[in-house]
Image (cartoon, rainbow, N blue to C red):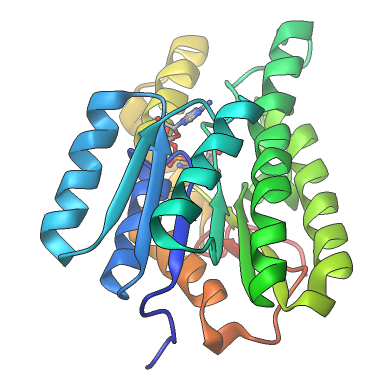
Length: 262
Ligand code: NAD
């Protein structure tokens, strides 16, 4: 299927590993020029290099923290200077730690808002004017199944991700007239380092083995397995493509059917 993505410029935030990295790789495989960023210089450089080599892709990478508004502005400016556009922007960051309400400190709440919500604001503020100029753009946020259904011990995610969905819907309404489509992707349990961290913290708290925790997560999905980062990435690429040209303001879950609502 022709996705119409060849030559487009795709920014993928927080993309040195996990779902972000898989998305960067999937865009490169479709012939996009890709801009990646993350905090860890070495992991990011390795990921960018691999994508360059595997897909003969043009990849720009910069070490930064997505909660730093000035760094995000300079990154987007550098991408536009290098590639001439910012057509697609996937916002992403590490997820908040697993905690119950009384265990979460005020600092935890501020950090969760900064990483999960404000990072999206920073990227949207920078890329939208460039997208408006070309009358074409795609913003895709990576959040979680928690936007639809709370997950135990993830009170920070359960609460803060909803704000991202409100932002997605608002941006979709405000900028649809400019040809900018804004959607949200909510992964279910997906086999990345983030999930290993969650398993470890649950295992410590409950005394259950990490293996049993992974098995119980897999059992929650009708497909009876965890998702692969590539499967989330494929949905992100579809949403960015011409094949999704009448889809905006939506949350698409990639959760193996784990969400139990209608
Ligand atoms: P991950 O921990 O494997 O990767 C996170 C990436 O973000 C890494 O590249 C890391 O370097 C980067 N990063 C983290 N904080 C950053 C910051 N402040 N600035 C720049 N880069 C930063 O995580 P993942 O599993 O790929 O998850 C991606 C998103 O999807 C997270 O928000 C996570 O909560 C969410 N999610 C994941 C799952 C899952 O099961 N893996 C489920 C639901 C939601």
